[in-house]
Length: 132
Image 1 (cartoon, helix red, strand yellow):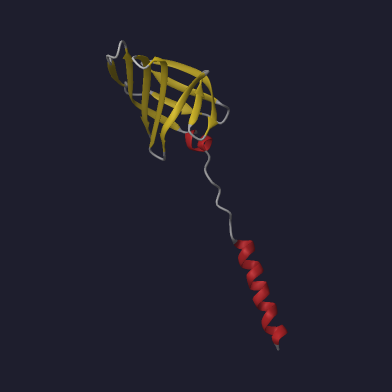
Image 2: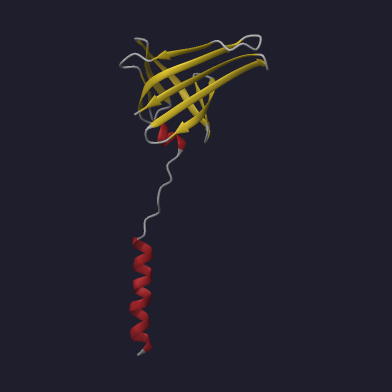
């Protein structure tokens, strides 16, 4: 009698484990691999402690498209380019040899940031805000 009850129970457990799918965790690379509309580019050149901020609103049609092949195709200010990219960590990307921090990356927003320090009072930084 116990055998008749155990066999269906064991089979049920095996079937339920076999039917469970593992969730694939999205990687930074897979999250990037889309066409992103460039919204604004904010540049700051701090010289002798004084910020010189310039915000450029992107032109209609400006975009960055990250491909599976490690190339980003982009259009900025009516200029088309293709440059290599690689993801160096969960929050860092290298675009054309230049490292950027990934400040935000979700289904609708991508924010890239780069800062070149000379010293505390002199540096350059750029923030690229994108959406999809």
